Length: 135
Image (cartoon, rainbow, N blue to C red; front, side, top):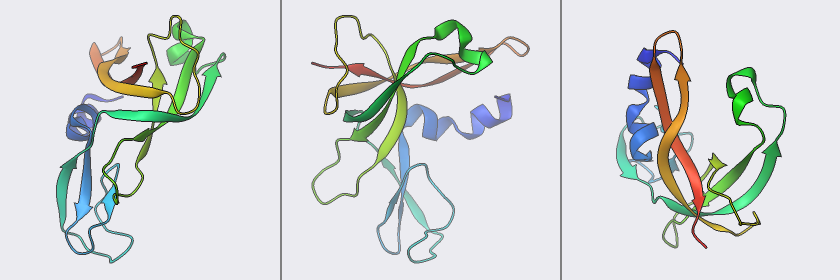
């Protein structure tokens, strides 16, 4: 990942920010420039909760070359704990710290900012969220 892209995506990556359309109130994660419901272009920033539950998961045994040293690892779709009445927000994250845990649908998790990758050429370290079991 390029240094420019990392800096451009910093709010979304590091602060788990979504955008809410000022016109109709629809929530978007990741943020987008145009609302697909009302075509509005004005948005407010909303910080999402860092807790959620596993909706689905899989274990990767043959990863892309960049993550070859990490295999096998588990990736899950996490549904965030939003207040009642809010739309469902889901994201994909690696599950980590699984020693002694049986991964299952509905398992509560906490999102933590962790190192995801390092570019050997530019020495840029990429951070992002990983899911840690809380039960």
